[in-house]
Length: 372
Image 1 (cartoon, rainbow, N blue to C red):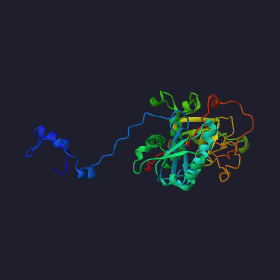
Image 2 (image 1 turned 120 degrees about the vertical axis):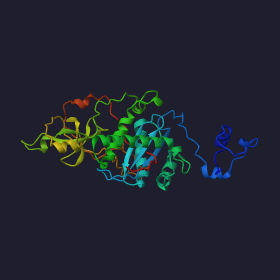
Image 3 (image 1 turned 90 degrees about the horizontal axis):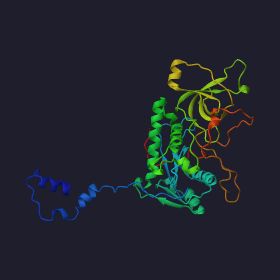
Image 4 (image 1 turned 180 degrees about the horizontal axis):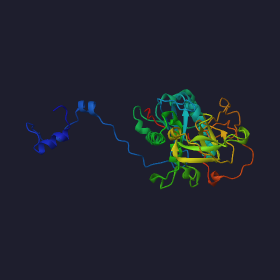
């Protein structure tokens, strides 16, 4: 019968739906057919585990997503690496150009979160991708006494937490890119913002609390959230404009800064990512509509914008090679450039100061290797 299923055959015979078949006593209890096993063996299901870590960083899930067909606009990245704390479900996203950067990214991310939380990474769980099996990372894990758990080959479900995170972030990113009518070169910023939102949303699995809340002990303040990809106007510093020049320039909203009370924008005029606290938003207007209608409106003023990057924390660390021998300075957020310029001039309060808390984690995946 072409190796049709035993139970299916028996049911057909019992219901009279099949003729010419003689059912022998005990047929349903016969040994399994090796050919059926070889050709049709299904995967054992992997239900979502109800057991979670009881302390921060006790277990960290990680994965790499990519390559994306389109390089990221700001850094030319084609992958993103995620780290997920099993206890709080807080996640970090870091954009990278190649998988070879994973070991370096993990070292720097680990130093940042350990100093921020006061906890230590005990177990790192990943798939068997070459980026996780390389000598550089394996040596580092051994030196730090970190257990490395690996999924069974060709069984990505065993790294399910990271897989689900990747799917969640890419689904959200696709949605906001579509709404903003921006092309896929903006995928990096979209994934970053999706992660920012996800970390602040309550979850049934966490008793209604958010990952951010469990990680920091604070209720997340999302008053600075805006429609992603909407047009905005930011103040041009007095020192950078002439008397009759406009006081405001146009930008695209990309997110909320993780290191200061400011918004992250893409400056249309300067073609760069920057931060500003003095912003007027036009949430019903996206870049496509702005170009089509040639909109021109005035902005307001409060604080000078400064250059920034929301993508890779250039927490560049020249002391990597001798980290055990040298005392390192306080690590910066692993999703931002250490070289950012800051304005030391006292500034008046702004609407952004309404925030009570600042997200200190980041955005610092799973082999959802699909492209956009």
